Length: 115
Length: 111
Image 1 (tube, rainbow over the protein chains, first blue to last red):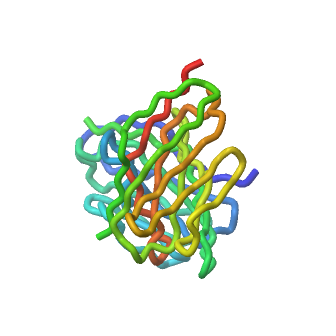
Image 2 (tube, chains in turn red, purple; image 1 turned 135 degrees about the vertical axis):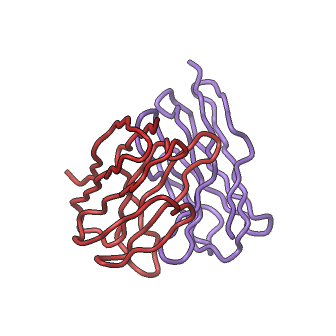
Image 3 (cartoon, rainbow over the protein chains, first blue to last red; image 1 turned 60 degrees about the vertical axis):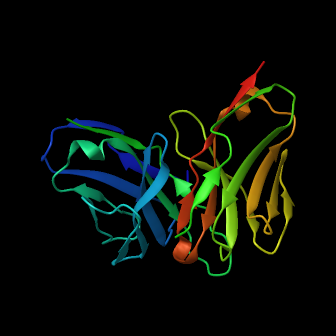
């Protein structure tokens, strides 16, 4: 089944304790992206990657890191989480074909609480 | 930068009625305009898209209208069903696949 998977789905942690949220897709998509979703603010892009070893900042990158060593994986790293990073996180992927809209497929989400 | 706004944060309709969800955008250079549906506890799911050189596109029970003159986008759902209850997001695609989302409209379908 074609899908985007994220782990963990739920995480409660404390301020300053490094964590990684994994994202994997099995559709051979070039493009991958991380979003956070907060009440009243909609979905905001954190980082994105056009292909392996190519990453770039989205609208709210502060406090986050990413890496793209393999095409299928795009982990989100919080080196020193803070309470304002409590949010619902989504990973997404798509093909990257020029001249057309490439549907983004979203993972099921990771609900993170930082105490 | 690009901004996308929705006219109403919530919309309540009766089962069987038609629903219309509206959205406004700021950047005239956007190539694609997209609607996503997000059910409770799930990630957003693609519904339909429309290219900037079109003004109407129809799918199964859904129609998207694009008015570039007033920078307005709408999603029409025909014969709304309980399974249509969700949050609906409009989004615009900029270069490099970047999507800018609106804040969402929560659609509630009453039986």
